Image (tube, rainbow, N blue to C red; front, side, top):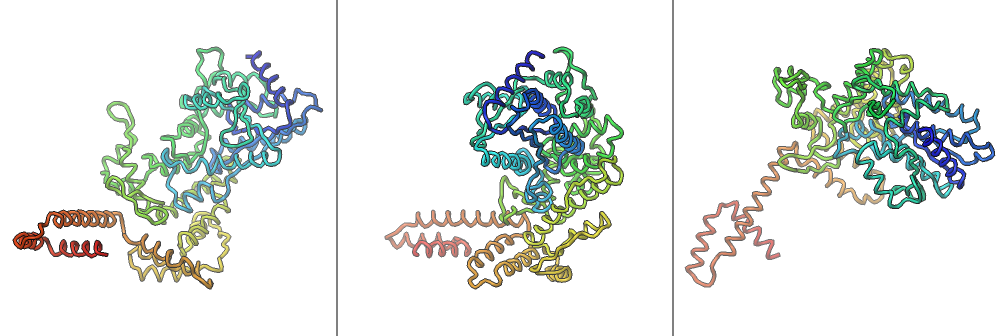
Length: 552
């Protein structure tokens, strides 16, 4: 291992001195990115000062829903890096990247009503992780012509990662350097691609961290996130590794269970303050451990079935909510129309759209409650935790008012109800309705939510087009809103679809009757007339309409 590290350090030094292309090192705070950054730091720090001329950027993407302990760890690392880089004369600058406010998790889920991310609809990754990093790299390329991206990717991480890396090996410039398929004029250098988990930990524990963080603390964090609370020192190939734990977004619903957070809470009583985070994540994921009984009753579960959830069955396995029932819970939370107002039918069901208004308001309240609880009961370093920022809430409020046309403006009320503080409201000059107008209009529309929403959307069209000399596009906008309000629920949409199919079948039948109708003889005309007369009046009308369309 010592020989391999020496050779790698020499390779890093050679590449660093080969040109003036700046380096961008990806750092997430995990073991792999820590090992790569430590390797690069050691290599450059051992060069003569006059040769350390090329800039090294260290980028960390904060999705704003990172696991709180990891987020604190990365922030502390950045602070120590700045100080150590200055003291040691290493040309390294850490950067914390965040997504645009319009792309954050809560703005899209609470504001726009995007459903929880799944393997089929993973809308979060590109917005929150990939775009901020790519934007930074593009800026470096624009300023310098090229960039070298240094990553801690390893083939041993997964079979999928190994296949992907092997695919890019065909186009390599040299060992461990590949072109970046996503970004022109950038290369990817993966110095530890052939290391396994044991070798990563061996390097981290045997070589002192150059920016002053202790790698034993990093190991302890992984140890706490392992279900068996085991993270042994690797002595030989028979010793199990501590590399299977993974950290990511605490709200992640793409995975079935958040095993890391569950293990942290289980293994350390001092981390019990994280339980509300896990509960909210499970509720969002429709996991039985986070669901309220009222939602389970709504999908038809009995009290006995609800009481059995989470217990152990005869085979020793926990009783879980079925995938079908999870789908029912999720469907009840969402509108039957897509976000653009269309109704799409598939396999006897409507394809659900965004979260309904009451659920978006509920998620905001839950996030603020968890945030408030951690601030009051969590450890000292979490007293200023911000699960949803003020900037995000301003954007959520803007979407609710001007995209969702929800003029009752409930966000400030929810904020005050949970925090006891006033929300810094900025009232728009073009806000059409105040709370009193909203309530009066809602009373007029009675209990018809779809009709009520149509009225607010039509008012918004007036707001959008008023003051224009030529109102080009207003009729198309009105038609679009009217089409979106055709049905009051999914059942009505299916009834309309069935009626259309029945009408189409009747027209086909009548075409067949017309095609088979004999001509030229009086007797055949009488028989034909008898056939048509046996057709229902509705069918006759359809037949006549079809004839009219063909004549036209």
